[in-house]
Image (tube, rainbow, N blue to C red; front, side, top):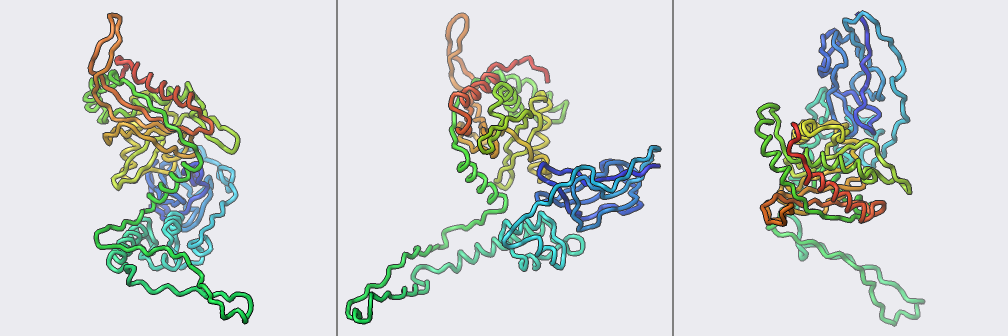
Length: 449
């Protein structure tokens, strides 16, 4: 028998600590490797943490509600290994200075003095939705010991939004119903002897009242839509966007996919979409033009060695999320197909982890799945470029052969490439998207899958 330490795992690049929400196992329970042992909250997600070893949960070192730095031991597991593992009271990774978060409505001090525990995720949602600590205390909790879960606060926000919308639609006063505007104070001119001079009242600029009829619908943005809106506005402010367009003949890609997708589905149980092929071509082009795989920090350009490609996924509620395929240039099309399908599925099921969303260096958005031909995508900061792939349509095109030029039916699509003009000039931005098109046009139909 040997005792091994289970430590707080790293759950994303910027996540340095986690809060224990609930232990799913108790001391003395037998656990399997990768079996969920506890629930942990960060400022981004609530997630289950799996066991690092199989054995007996010997001791719990971190209690519910405790904030634990990444790398610090949280439990002892008794394994069947003969070689004992050294136990250390120090964190396995260097501890970082705690990040001080400020919020006008819900802050760490208020949460600490509250009568019940709130996870960082719940507090973040409360701050984003302008929920005060007093209001947060009134939300019924369905978690352990009445804890407010993510679902509890989201359900409360939705109920509040519906109530506000109903109130606004039924009781918004028209202009004629509003209270009269108080008149501004009259100013005196010079001394008392000038009272005989007629005095003009100051003119106050008043914003016209908004009059709503019953023929409207008021929709409050949800938390994710607010975040998306903020990031899109920031990106347009930070990066001067330029978009270049290229039309590509993807007939070889279409024929190859049609020849393999049924067998791939039967053999692998996976769908074969165009997205993995697009990502494959982008990864190859990023190797050729590494400046597109970079970010800007002040007056410095940071070129990334890892090619981590984000793929935009539309969610059932209409919002957008961008999980990341790490080291995409090291995967073949089969591997990319697995990663694309896995991330898309977990995105739509709300099962992505913080690490799935971190570290992207370039983004691809397949707008062709919505029947769109062209687009002007907005860069995902701190990246410097993004590519949109349009719908694939049949068109008559000129085919050049050794016997001469002919007209034939080809599968064509547009590529829309937006890039940050601070560091990417039109020549480089245009050459990059042209290289992506070249890789697609010259796709080898004999490629093994």
